[in-house]
Length: 629
Ligand code: WTA
Image 1 (cartoon, protein in one colour):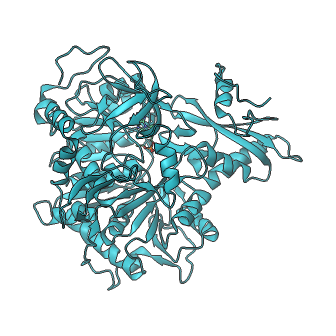
Image 2: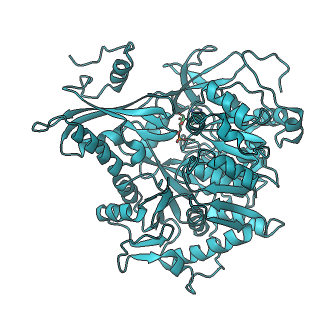
Image 3: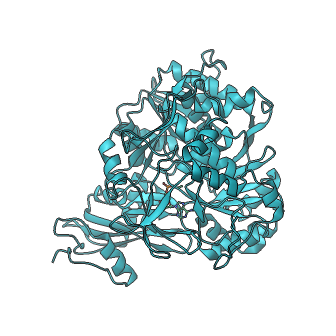
């Protein structure tokens, strides 16, 4: 990389890492800098297309950018069939361990076979190209098979995280107008069963569009099966309709691949739309270069398929690269705090990609738990979801990585689909910095007026050039897409994060500038928690904010005004927490609920959460001129 002396604490890659890295860094950056469309085009050329594109980018209708115009492909074809046609047919695509110790693995051949069989099942349920299918499961192989089966036949998958609950699932079913729901009977989590089917039954009472429910047996407890609507996956997969021959739907590069709901500033979660062509190219290239995937590697991204990290780097990125991906069903520290380390040793994992909250959680148990296992197979580490504090970074580097594994701190979003600011194996690292934009991206930090800020000044993080894996729109709401991402600074994509850039051009993410709260790396919105609170008969008004938390990064604190006739009791507060858990999901449960007489509002009636936050932290609330008397 650069010859220039870098400021601050810097960790340089070893000769070994540099020698073997896929990304010959400087070359990649300079190629992309000179010709960013040429760079993406060359990456696209590594994948298989039924018909080549006429043009790489169409920006004639900004901000509705289109990529690989008139190109025809199918991402599932590139994930499976391509590898089955060559030397990877017998390679392990996916191996899995259940929390209870169950083990399964799939070669590329087997994963394609089961995907085809399930795709035929979906077809027999009347699922056609463009139809939406919701997937609500734990971390089990069937979740991945279901995603790939949808992609294969051109259906649009909408995966709902298994940690979400009744109302969250209902909203997503309703908004996506899903025809089919694929659900597991339950999921193992900390030795207990999360009753997914039971939650789904309740959500289905509120949602009308679902015609068929396909149920995967995982936990085996008694569940309700509604005649005519609910069917067992394992039974369907043994019927003659579930043939292992299933034609691939030829998809236009711009045809939708999936919807993924995510929290924004206002209202309900919105469905981010990604496509077959651009998303495929973006996840393929970033996964290859950043995680430096080699043929013999075993890659473990600990994310849940229900979040973008799971979509891009458990499923699509690794499979597009013909890699071997590992998934684990359960809780990180169950039954002992070395569960993860045991599995790294057992499966010989080379690349581990996880979140700062997990690292901080492990730190609490001390080094000894990590040192019980042999982690010498690890070569590269990754971090995602929130800024990693330098203390956690150093612990991860030293204790988990044995001071030989560079850490890829990857900044990106559901909307970006792929890594945006990230180190690569060849990058000199500074603990806590995501380092630099990925090749082919133009990123900046600007002030209120949209002008670049000075070195080390804080400002809004924006992206100035389109990229292939970018969201195309918000499902059914193109106006919100324009409004939310492209209106504050015309011509720039507004990320919702604040950041600063140091004298070496390294980016340091500070955090969200909106009402998105990152709890243990999970993305939630103040609005969802507030609307769950006010759906309880006792609550008149509510405001939810995130406050710093040692392990979770942020924890939710809620302020409520009670309706007349209700009194503050410990029981009521506990009931309210449970209620939020039941409606949104356990991750959304407030840490603390405070009963207040009034909430700070603007004269137009908007709650000023910033003022609540400043008050809770005992800091200056800044400009409060719009505050109501
Ligand atoms: C935050 C997750 C600092 C950021 C992939 C972003 C990060 C939001 C990092 C998107 C990181 C993600 N360093 N902050 N490496 N990665 N974030 O959509 O605030 O669930 O805007 O996507 O997570 O969250 P999302």
